Length: 198
Image 1: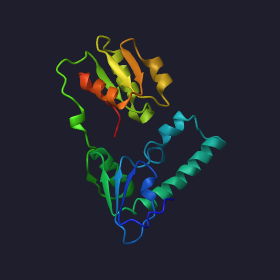
Image 2 (image 1 turned 120 degrees about the vertical axis):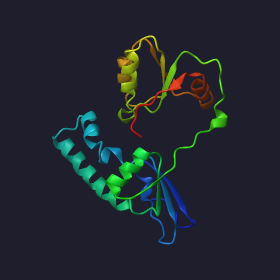
Image 3 (image 1 turned 45 degrees about the vertical axis):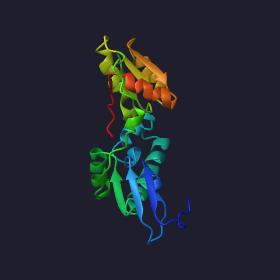
């Protein structure tokens, strides 16, 4: 636990645990929520299946731990004085799971950093951490059905190998890119494609 008692206010950015920071009763706490804990709530069974955690001893232990995590998560959801959600979808999940309302504040975009490029490359970009909940596999399958369209996947993650084996010849992987190269790749693309539920 971080000791934040010496500060006037606390702002947390949370997809899991930082929301649970312990604050003083008179200390305002604003929490920017990117998602309720996915693997503990509505996506629990998907994560258990991906981890091949059936009903054996390991699976039972994980289910017990997730039950404890849900108890903690529900309790700490009432700690922040104000919750902000990064999308309407996340706001609806906050309402459903925690019974709280949240204001939607979309993530900022550094428009000045993204130059206008007239001469676009003949490709599309999908950029994210390559994890199941980002659903990059759906993007790849769609582009496999359109072999004349090029797709560049930016990022790495636990699904890197399986996604590479799924991809057709019109799909290339660049891995993680330095910020300047990443911005240039986005600026030159025809469009960015994203299929995750966020």
